[in-house]
Image (cartoon, rainbow over all chains, first blue to last red; front, side, top):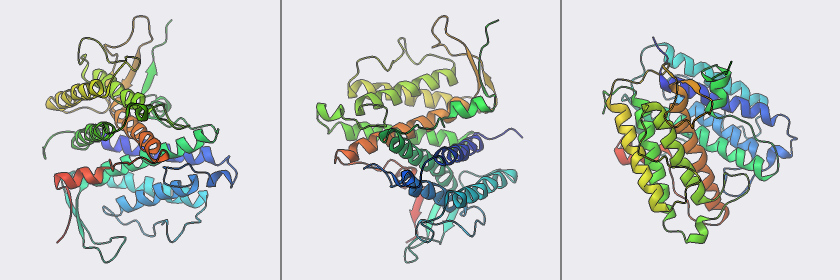
Length: 174
Length: 176
């Protein structure tokens, strides 16, 4: 069966977060706390938020416990975040290894962050498209924080990913 | 639209143009000098970034459809007002509809060239998923930067995530 476009997107998303984590490993612990106004927060906090949200999106489709959490594990190390990103990666492959994912399936979500809130009915495409949107949005903020503080940014767009997979090739003149 | 092929990508592109359209409308409330605001670490000014999003969208769609969207390409360097950018966003919307009105997109099909390649420039070959995924990634990336610029300057931001779009469509709703 050919690879679905959404799976390609999710793989790029996870690759980009992995790359970004590797990129920021060379920063000092003080630099990981850098931020700029108008973004979610520090580099560290934003990376944690990206992966925690990834797990929350995916646990609507399949078991993901225990998940990392911005409130309960705010001091998770980069290694902890990477370990959870691996779970995200495995879950995405598992999700698409089985039956075709129905974009219009409605999921009843009882596990609200605020337990007093009523359940949500969410269509599948919303969750997976938000997964992709959310990661790109917050990685862009980290790019802005790095750039604004005079630090090198990471090349994590789809072109870089496609070149790595040999899916984007420049013609060689002979 | 429930049984259309490439349902995730089609909806992503519809969300993408919705979000860019919302952002353009938000920016219409800014004064001309506010449109030229920027902040370090971003692409450039608000206006230049909006133009960059839409001109890049056109470029990706020309590659994906294999057909120019109009006679003269919309370049990043063209002088453009918000009205010009909004007009080009309509071309983007039309191209998205054309892209999904034909046979299903094969993510792995190799695109061998683009009609927009300047004479003498190198030719790139790429799998269809690459420009399709890049279109989505690129728009989010740069809208996020505009959001940061607005915040840095104490200006109102808007929620352009998939959630408000889905709520508008009734695709995410709270159980009463």
